[in-house]
Image (cartoon, rainbow, N blue to C red; front, top):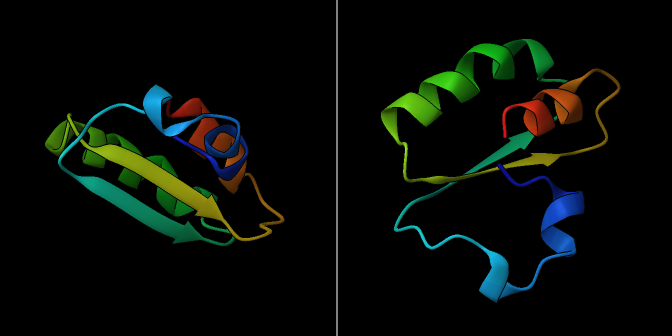
Length: 68
């Protein structure tokens, strides 16, 4: 899974090819992402999942990073 920090350091040739991209804007959504991200990965295993953290004060960014 890409976070804004990791995505900005990669070029387009480094990104995986996928027909589906799921973009999740998130602010203080750590609790929701804990359940949602594994479900998305299970149902859409080939999808690129991007969590866009909007200055969260909880563990939103860390949960996104740990999800891969």
